[in-house]
Amino acid sequence: MEQDGTRSRFSQALLAAVIGALLLVPTAGHARNFFTVAVIPDTQNYVDSANPQPQSLATFLGETRFLAQHRHELKLAFVTHVGDVVQHGDGTNGVAGDASWGAGAEWERAAQAIDVLAATGVAVGLTPGNHDYDSYSYKTGSRPLRGSVMWTRYFGPESRYFAGKRWYGGASTDLHNPGMSSYQVFKAAGRRFLHISLEMEAGDAALAWAQRVIDAHRGDPTIVTTHAFLDPPADTDARLPLEVPAHRIEASYLTDSPGGWNGAQEVWEKLIVKNDQIFMVVCGHAWNPTVHDVSASENVRIGMNDAGHTVYQVLSDYQGNTSASAGGDGWLRLMEFDHDAQNIHFTTFSPVRDQRAGQHGEWTFNQPPTFSDFTLPMPVQVVRSTR
Image 1 (cartoon, rainbow, N blue to C red):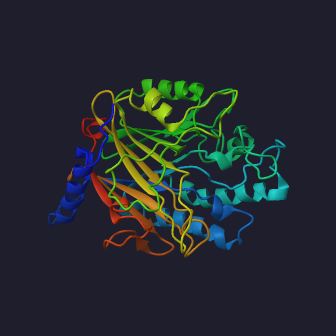
Image 2 (cartoon, rainbow, N blue to C red; image 1 turned 30 degrees about the vertical axis):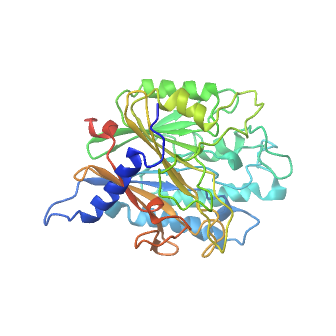
């Protein structure tokens, strides 16, 4: 079930929450009870061998170094990557990728950036996008998506990022693309959270795996990161967020796959709405063509699950922004969970540009600033959690 329609109560709640956030004044001497979950959007252009290197990689490194250096001020509890970590998955030869596209070098560059986060001990989740599958090559074609050789080697359960980590729960064993989904458990503000990195256009077997993970962690407020879920608004659409619900992406890359496939709407119906503890879906993948170095690439949708509680769905993909760096300008999405104010403040920040999008009402991405900087009420799934 979902509340759709122009000027829905969710749209009104968003605008009221944004205005209310501007009026909040910290109490002198009071230690704020908050933590931050950071979202790293698509990074494939930063590591792409076709782009100037190491200049492009410097943007990805700038993102992870910022998070590492400011983790204490942010009270950084978790970092999630929405996928398309590299440009050319190219594990087609089962060894080191397709050398003609420099895929091996791309994975090594990505590992350099993730190493910065790994050194901090902060829990991290990495979700595969279409570019991260072995079959994704401009030479061999990309549909259906298949193969996990390169992903497993660099970011699988036995990789240096996850092996032996207490917060890492494990990976899927789906026979079609084994190990492409995983889960993590992290603690923040006295609560235990579950995060699921759900593979691209997850098939029924992957959804069944995710359901088993949720069943084993009943009551833990849950975030799902999956690569493709929401589309951005049209370039000509200047309406405020939530006035018309964001479109959910239909499946295309896994069509005719032997492992089955589901579009975003099917994932919503088969997994999200049936599990009340899921309060947020985070995604990337979709962006509008660049116009004068700027791309509209943010969106927000709020749906209602079968229990009558809200689920936030948030798109963050900045690869079409190119004024400071090829393929994204270093923009990150930061989600600050404030348990005193009982809200989540979403901001968009680039350590490369040293700029916060929409902070002063500017249309940073040719979209209303409330797509970039907004506040939503703390979901009941988080409020009621006590462990």
